[in-house]
Length: 172
Image (tube, helix red, strand yellow):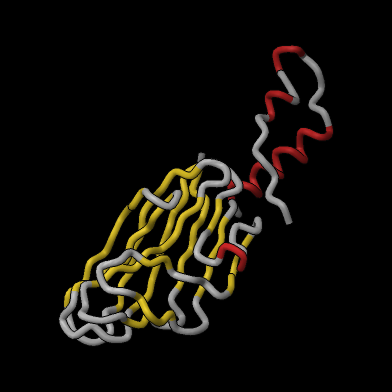
């Protein structure tokens, strides 16, 4: 179901003109409230591990399925990206872990447009650093966000299955 765009009810009814409220005005207000309550969003997850995450290189997480996708924001054809369909602020949340670490530094971050990096969470420690990352990011129509991995271990690592990312519209 496509999410309706917001329309100012005053464009349908101007009380200063002394005209009765049109029947369609109630429908538009309802649609605006539904949009505000259930705004665009997608949540994706990995159903298997991502192997070969190279050291000292930013690597986009490849997602396998979506558990919520209101406006076809995620597609298997661009499996690393969630693409906005409406301009506005989006709450981005990512979660996951490397399966090994051996004291290496690990980083989870967001990237938009293939080049701009946002919030990151760094972890230095032993086995299985569970990490999360969250940020409020402004996206224009067709901008995309990816969750990025980085580490400085001596060899390629594995990023665990059941990692997730959600991108939810927070407002204009």
